[in-house]
Amino acid sequence: MIAERIYKGMNPEKTWDLAIFKVREGLYYLTWENPKKSFKGLADSEFLSVEELEISWENSNINNLIVFKGDEKIILDELLYNMEDFPFRDVNWGDLDLSNNEIMSSTEACEEWGIDSSTLRKRIGDFPEGTIRKIATTYAVTKFGMRCVFGSKKMI
Image (cartoon, rainbow, N blue to C red; front, top):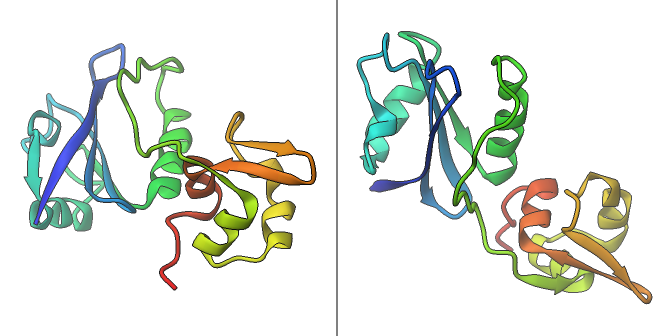
């Protein structure tokens, strides 16, 4: 199976390459790599085999290579967490698009994710800004917001 690089960037000091690879919806790899000290060059590849990404993930944190694996929520959490450890704050994300922003009612979202409406209401404060809005007696949510809060949808 092949993963496609959907984002490539570098911190301002040009000491760490960042790349996000998409295997399929709900499965991504995030790589941080020191290009001067690592011999992999993952960020330079537009396509990589999932096997190579798995090996890199299993051997992560060695040879100046850090690899994370997970759904949209995990990858975004790791991005936010790990950006704190680097000497930069602002990153030009370019055309980064982890998902479409299809809007649906809270009822539809609850059905798709296999959760009840009270679970969604309890987590409203966890949604990224602009991904949920109250309309009359219901909520409109985006798929991106649902992925950020609840991860990839459960298959029922």
